[in-house]
Amino acid sequence: MERVQDLTRIRESLTRMQYEYVRPLSSGAFGSVHLVFSVKYQQEFVVKCIQGVKCSQIENNPEIKSLLMLCHPNIVEMYDYWQEADCIFIVFEYCNGGNMHDIIVEHGALPFGSLLSYTKQIMSAIQFCHTNGISHSDIKPQNIIIDKHGRAKLADFGLSQIIQGGAISAYFHGSPLSLAPEVLKKVPYDPFKADIWSLGVTFYIMATGHAPWKASSRSDYLNQIVSGTEIYYGGVNPEYSQFLQYMMDIEPSRRHTAVDLLSFKMFEDKSLIKKTNSGGFSSHLCCGFSKKSKRLRFHSSMKSILTFG
Ligand SMILES: Nc1ncnc2c1ncn2[C@@H]1O[C@H](COP(=O)(O)OP(=O)(O)O)[C@@H](O)[C@H]1O
Ligand SMILES: [Mg+2]
Image 1 (cartoon, helix red, strand yellow):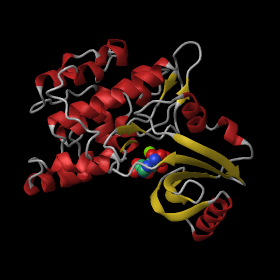
Image 2 (cartoon, rainbow, N blue to C red; image 1 turned 120 degrees about the vertical axis):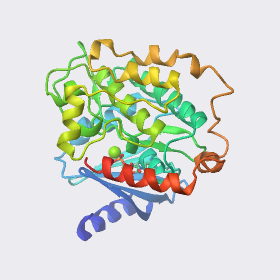
Image 3 (cartoon, helix red, strand yellow; image 1 turned 60 degrees about the horizontal axis):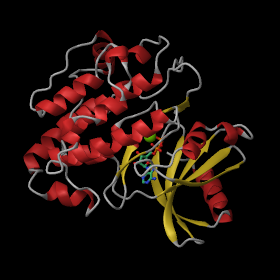
């Protein structure tokens, strides 16, 4: 939770930049995210405040550096940024459809048409990042948000890495539950391959409504990732299941690239893919899927497995 004096300082800085404070959206390890209203543009935006930074760290902020290089319909758009004292402020478009984690906790697994559509959109965002030499390095359902048109957007580039030269990293951060086994093992790794693993975990959760491994504790869960415990794909569409297996291969060199994965036939079938840019997410979730009993069951299992992290 934001301390009162921090929030006061945030609000003062926002006022100086002509934003009216609306409400908090989220508070995380590195800072907080707020809904604001721009007096100048007469519309809502989101501001992320990263506190405790040293002077002029803004030039090295990975989120700003990466997003300056990335303009894509499925990557959250950054509009402005500034630093005041020890706080960096980053202004984004407001995506009012919520994040994928909260949607799944609320509604359970996605209907197949929506799943395919969002998968294709996020794959395309990742392909774009990788083509531009950027690894997101923190892919998980919480970092996929839905905009007012129902489009999925990849967000939170706070841990992203701009890779120059050989694609080997020794940077071991991220959300443990979605991290690739080689990153958890802390051996030098290829960050693009690690992104593909995390994306596989994320898509698995979207397809099933639960995490890939059943575990009684966080350490048990992490052990299963590292030891390569087999994943159960029962109930997942066969082609989608094959697609996931190419992503969650314990051996990084066998994992497919974003380009390979986008060439899967299922992405070409227009009759399967649900249009998500015409009416938003909630409208198509309402069409026939979320029975209350199922929703509650998924709700409790998701809560228990995804709150380890
Ligand atoms: N542009 C945005 N529009 C709407 N909600 C957002 C936006 N950016 C972030 N959020 C919400 O805030 C949460 C945290 O934002 P994020 O950038 O992931 O920061 P953190 O570093 O705290 O994880 C997201 O999971 C999402 O729910
Ligand atoms: Mg995040």
